[in-house]
Image (tube, rainbow, N blue to C red; front, side):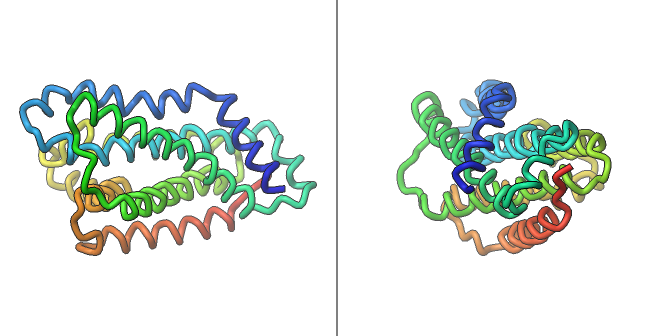
Length: 238
């Protein structure tokens, strides 16, 4: 059953290659746009690297897995699964396994690219901490996406909600608009979004600082647990 669901999620991913290419391409495009800044500030790439990874995670969690699920609800495809022993928790955790594998492949590719072309130092990193934080961040956004894909009774509402939340998270990621340049009220809102907490936590792991400093780890963990439970509670086959 688990192998069957892994195959299902893999096929869903392959059938929508544009989502995967968008997820991979957007960070590379962003990297190209800020390449001049990295030349002026050697530390910029070291700080910005986690932001690019989080952007890729957002794309795969929202425009691929969550939107694919919402689409499957609309076309009544998931009714077939309702007649099988597949439980919501099996559907969700196998989806995480497939997409997380894609994210890890991207992270390796992106690391090699930035190391070769931007001289980003890959040595002396706590890879255990980085990997653990990356898995946690991915799970948080995956659960948020799955919750939005299921919470609405009318499946046609879910894609609109997913697109709105996705672009809000992207635009408030500090990748396109510096937080410091925003009005005070927008700075307060932005600094308290899941995106910024995720970036802050991944930056701590990437830079080798104390991930327990501040409240990012606690908040990201709490959001992950809450939306993990909500995604199971509101899971819909149709």
